[in-house]
Image 1 (spheres, one colour):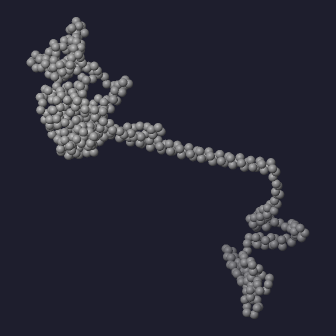
Image 2 (image 1 turned 120 degrees about the vertical axis):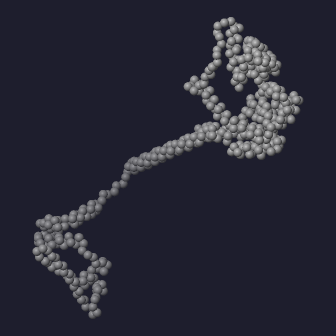
Image 3 (image 1 turned 135 degrees about the vertical axis):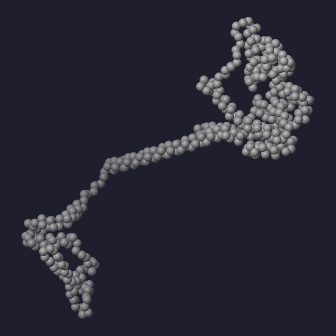
Length: 473
């Protein structure tokens, strides 16, 4: 070590010895011992290399010191080969078993690391085989990845399918609720009254009255003013249906359906002129031409007082209903006309539910279900024993007794006029309707009262109807 590396603490370059003494007192139950140790600080500092820091004793220093102590104690060792002879290392192992074991492991590890096998170059076949193994492993990894990806996509598809099915069911229930509301609680909100602009121009003040009536009934949105209807009033219904598209998804289908009923508003004076001129049939056909909805009922609303005899009006009413399925309605004031349109709107709205119920009953009846309705005849049956004349007369009398508001005296008078209903069918089928009504209506009963045209219409309908539906209507 160079002289300039030493540390000098004096002024005259003379090293001074600084001795540090440490005393430790150990006290036990029997005695008290004092242990003293000292060392020179200057000597320790000057003798160490300057590149190394001062370090404290480690477990290796302690073990080496213990080994030196044992060698000196035995004084038996051989110099050649560094063989320690008969040194008893049991004491050393007992004292420093953990540290010695660690040193042995370190030595064993160092010796094993020092011996390394020589690397050998692979042959072409081995390289090819190794390459094939790597490619096979890569294919297996790719296949596993594809399988996991397919499973993931399948699970995602199932989840999406369930979600779509749930949304489809939710949408179906929503549409079904709307359909049910359109037939029940909100039937008026799905029915509309379309009034022609010409009607409002002909009758001043009608538009304001219509808006007032519809607002009071909370159906103000159901009133529509149409410029293309002329003098007609039409009632239309918004229909909601549930349909499936090509992909099987439920969708809401909406369309407007015109009811099989419309009204034509005509001033009473104009209608009187039409009737007197004999052009009523042409007038009805002209109005029906603008309303293409198959077999429907036409209401001819006479606004004002129609100055005609009731008998004549009644006869004309029967004729136009039989021929054109038209009826007369006489309205005197604007509030009545506004209320008339609103009442028909409610009636048509509620009729749709009854029609659906009747259709369901017919379907169940056709299938022979428990809900099928059966017509039962509750009247008296005629005799089955006797001559043909007696049997026909008795059965004909029982048939006439089922007609409402037909008295017994009128029934007997009709039997005298028409003793055999089969002959009456042949007779009145060939006769003009007006002549037949007049002949039957002029029959006088025992009490001096005539049968009348209304009852005559019922009798004639019973005899001449080919389907059996007219008498029911």
